[in-house]
Structures are given as C-alpha cells and as structure tokens.
Length: 348
Image 1 (cartoon, rainbow, N blue to C red):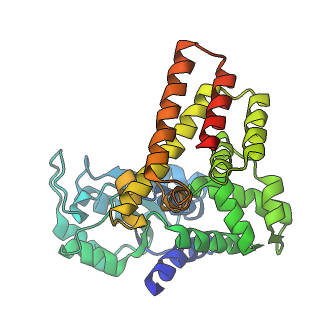
Image 2: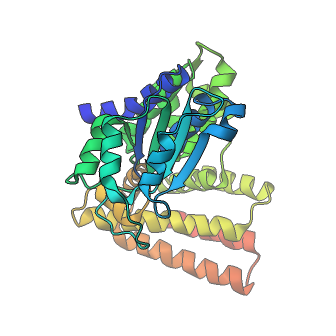
C-alpha cells in the first residue's frame, strides 16, 4: 500500500517541481495512462522554455525512426539564444522486451554514457507508452537510476480517490469524501474528464475552498451514459417510478431510444460478464483486465449483479435483444418499445 501511495504522490510532486523551475536533466514517463504522461510533458513544454525559445531549443524525436545517438548529439549541443533546451523522446522500445518492427540501430553505449553525465543545459524526457519495461536490461536500470521517473498505470478505485484528493491539493482546494464518491459516480474514471471537472469545481469554490457533495451535484452535468447508469441502478433497486422519471427526462432531451437501448444493453452485458467471471473465482482486478474496462465500473457492476441470478440476467439480455429487433424493424414506436422493455425488466 505504501508503494501505491508513493506512486500517486509522484505526479503531483513532479508537476510542482516543474512549475517551480526545478528541472531534472532526465525524465522517464512510462505506462499506459496517457493522461498522466501528457500532463507532465505539457508542463515541461510550458515551463522549461518561453514561446520565443521553443522555436530554436525544442526538439522531439521518434526512436522508431531516429537513432538515439543523434538525439544525444542534439542534447550535447548548446542552446541557441536561451539557457535551456527541451528534448522529448518518444518510443524508446529498447527499454522493453519487444522487438521493433522497423529495425533502427541504436548506439546504447552512447546513451549509457549520457545518462551518467547529462548536459546541464538540456532537459530530456523519454515517453514510453508501454505497460511495462524490461527491468533486466542494463539501459533500463540506468535510466531509472538517473532520471525522474513517473510510472503512469491505470488507477484502481482507491488510487482514483487518492488521485482526486491530490489533484484538489494541486488546485489549492479541499474535497470531502462524499463529494469524491459522487464525482466518480457522475463523471466516471477517465482522468481527463475528472481533471476537467475538478478544475471547474475548484474555480467555483475558490482558492482555499471546500468541494462538497452538494457542489458536485449542482455543477457536474450528467452525460447520457451516466443517466443510463442511474436508470440501470434504479432498475436493480426495483424503483419503477425513478426508472420512468429518468427515461421520460431523456425523451424530453430528445435522446435517441436506440442509443439508450444500446447503453442499457452494454450495462446489463457487463453485469452478466462480471457476475459470471467473479463466480469462477476471478478477482475484480483480473476481471477489469479481461473485459478491458475500468476497475471502478467492475466494482459497481459486481454490486448490481448481486441483485440478479444468472438466469434472470440471461432473460433480461434476451428481452433487450427482442427490443432491438423491434426498434430496427419498426414494429412499434421506438420510445414506447424501450419503455415497455423497462417495465418487463422491472417485473423480472
């Protein structure tokens, strides 16, 4: 748990140092959570150089096309009309166990020498959108030893909540625990969306303010997907009045019934898949990886699945398929067809 906490704090720490103009000569940004990588990269681009300096002292290289020794040569060249250079290096595939499709010969000895003695006037960031690096390789060990490292992995529910708290601190506000729960429920687990919503909430409460659950509910608009999730949640709880209220609201907003049906189908399919896989002994983390969905969605689906047997879920999915045929063949008014479907599911 301590390692998880340290990793969550690192992004905020790196960003704070960059904003304070405390630059490391080397950065390694790796992992599959591209938002975290791109955020640090953007902070470097906006803080290392001014707009005028960027024209002469900023470079980006793709190591699937360019030998690394050419990058080192650029890094060791003095900046022109400025004090710093910024070099962003993409796709350092030699840090992984993957064999590159296009063979580019890299002089890794040259890179090893540079890593131990980087140019003091150059900031170089390696961005590696890979799930993992090959820790057995000498070059990987060396860059992790000498660089400021950000491991950008997808966050589970606990990590997401801590990330939101840290992000609030970054924006000089506080956020209450119930507000975090509501924010995750309404905005989902996408970091880019969460960050945008946190910026909006922080501006609303002002520096030093506190984001409450009521603030989140009043400022965060529900997406169609979120409304359908709420609709499904109320189906699970057998709250027919609330189910129909949400559905009628969606009709007033001119949402397409066929799109609503598609989202309902996706939600119940996920509930069934999660229930089936957890019943076979897989934990929620493994299920999230197998289904390629966010762990937070798996947790919510697992909770919803407790209200149904497998046979009930199969029957509901069959009803949804029948409704889909009705919508596509024009046998009944679309909005009426989906409303009848919801009533049938509630009876199940």
